[in-house]
Length: 372
Image (cartoon, rainbow, N blue to C red; front, side, top):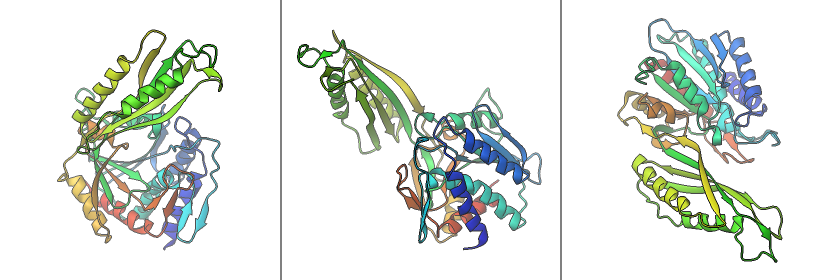
């Protein structure tokens, strides 16, 4: 492995060491902004959302730019131990693959272009964006797309070549379809009471658990793939108390917008009919990721596949819920590519494999060089 690839890995660890929970990405954003300035990229800035931008100019000023982005945020709270550990050809660290390596790859592309004296015809905008994980609801990428949208009245996005979204742990996969997502926070409220003297009165915990059982009994199709998950559940103040409040968070997903719409209708119908005397059930939408896609035959998709195969890797088309949801939902071309392999994403045992990073970076560089 050459010094350049080691430099990319070392930077990924540096980035990983700066905590960046969703909604608290500021310190990592400032760190990345400083790195952009150190590289003497042009138009370095940070917007009101916390997205960080930098431009590498191409030869043709009037050419459409390519937007390359990687999300700054992680799923881990500020309290998590961020210690990194190297073992053989792996690095273990929370958030190292999702998405510290993706952010580091932004700089890797700059370094490789300069080292090989590759001058691009088109501008490249490098973006480190916020709000990709969890309840961030892709808020950062919504702001990015608005910034580069050439025609706000039509939402055509014709001012860009497209978007290349970098994910640290997706090497060999080309995401060209965006899974639709709807998320709810469901609340149950009752009068509460004592577990003995008021026994028989509704408990918010019991009632919400019953509701969840009803929801998870809904039949979900295998094709198109459709999922439901209750990710959090809590309530009550003591073991001998009939809970007066309880809440849970529900995640619905589908490859097909129509299937998702049907599931949303079923879920909302159950929720609306759940309230009765002494029990109030409410739900609020806390996240919505729009679906979208470009054809497998689209030139960006085919180029991504070719660039991966050139490295002797198998290229797989896939769907996911990523920052690409936003441009794809607006008919703006976007693909997601990865940097390496690994595992344990979203856990404290997350790790990356270091040896495939060379092939991952070479495929990304080739894409950037040939696109346009």
